[in-house]
Amino acid sequence: MPKLLLAGTVAYDSLRTPQGERPRILGGSALHAAVAASILLRPVNLLSVVGGDFETEHLAFLQKRGVDLRGLKTIKAGRTFAWRGFYEKDMNTAHTVQTELNVLAQFDPALPPEYLDNDFIFLGNIDPALQTKVLAQLPARKFAALDTMNYWIASQREDLLKAINAADLLFVNDAEIRQLTGEDNLLRAARMLLTGRLRYVIIKKGEHGAMLISGKQIAVAPSMPLDEIIDPTGAGDSFAGGFMSYVVERGVNWDTLRAALVYATIVASFNVQGFGCERLAEITQADLDERLKVFREITRIN
Amino acid sequence: MPKLLLAGTVAYDSLRTPQGERPRILGGSALHAAVAASILLRPVNLLSVVGGDFETEHLAFLQKRGVDLRGLKTIKAGRTFAWRGFYEKDMNTAHTVQTELNVLAQFDPALPPEYLDNDFIFLGNIDPALQTKVLAQLPARKFAALDTMNYWIASQREDLLKAINAADLLFVNDAEIRQLTGEDNLLRAARMLLTGRLRYVIIKKGEHGAMLISGKQIAVAPSMPLDEIIDPTGAGDSFAGGFMSYVVERGVNWDTLRAALVYATIVASFNVQGFGCERLAEITQADLDERLKVFREITRIN
Image (cartoon, rainbow over all chains, first blue to last red; front, side, top):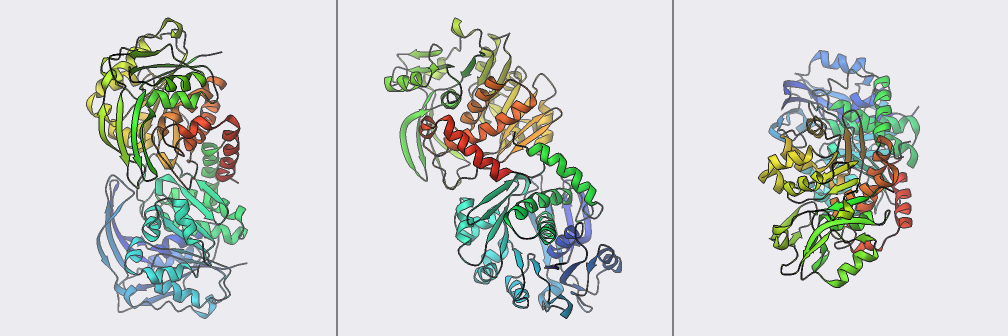
């Protein structure tokens, strides 16, 4: 069975949305991706770092979900990466109040020996130089996907382009790809990035769905219409984690990637229906299948 | 055969987009809708007004497309409604430079006797009091759809709500329905409007596709991915005109309405590939069918 590695941040998020607030709940790019991936696939391997303040119950939560923690380094003298933010009525935009890097500032993403045969890699949002360091340790990998954010596009563009060109697939949102390429048209922007090693771009458009673009083909999926959104934090990471788990299970080809796009859409739709990963942690494959059935009906082309 | 009436504006548009500019080309809500509807259905009936400056070649163009002009009033002493505007790189937002109402200010939408048996009605964007006047003349109509814009929501809210509640279907974009209802969630906003006579809401999201919502059901369609957009003017009107022509051909039920949503998406995708209705005026049913095939493949859920 192929092995999936999820690298990135584990965080304590303090969130406020129009639906309420939560202090210090589990968050971070690798965490959300791991919780999502572990619905379909167990075990999954986590590569990240936490501080001495990381709760035992949170370690237990992850272990119980089949998240392998040998790659989760604990720096006892430090504190876990923490993000404080809020959303206005327009849930598409996160407003940051405070970011404490804490142990993330010293993170050396050295893989434990047991992870060196991992063949499917998700590099969640983190410093692109660290993303490159992870990939450099996995020369025989089969498929690597990378996510990023506006901060790195603005501050470490060269490092980011290097990391992107070592990956097979890029997850990026519409505003980010426009910022990265200077091209407003999403198809053309994606094609500008597909000139090197990178083979696929997935443009995430939040409530407007997602597009998968290769050099030759396109697939689009709307998002699942929902009449209540509790917290959009981690939607993109759970999308990516769900996507990767599906690809590990089914293999890398155009048809499985486009099916994974839909699977990821359904996973992310559950993620936003609770704070942090609360909702996603409750659901089963049967819940996903049931919503997928509804989604098929809603999006069916006669 | 049922008869389709398209009421609204006929305009001379002077446009600038990142792709170029055009002075005084054919535009207006009823015009774009009629050009779109006449691909599938001929004749279609136009209810609007123009001035003495309206070109003979434009009358000939419409007549050749099977657009019945008995409802197109000419006020010889006046000038045709004129709009001047431009689009920045973000083609989703039209910036108005100048609006000259001209003959529109005196428009009395009295139906010619030949139109009194029209059973499918599209009320394009125009003063909602005029939309209500049109519907009042058609008590035996089968299906009426209405479009509007932010200007009327802000300035004539009561008249607009009255017109909406005399219609069966509302075409509205995402920003407009939020403005109209004060509700950010699109599903809930639509359901707020579905409490009276109105049975369906179509929320147009431009490049992000469209949603059809009834009291019980939902259908969503992404837009056709395009690598070049020439001019978005009239996209919504051509969408509505294409939608209505399909519904006239196939009848009013959930399955035909959801298929019409997809048909309309394809029609609108051609509309934005030329200035005004230039591109739409060239295409045939075969062109639509071919693109529909590509669209099915792009949006297929495995």
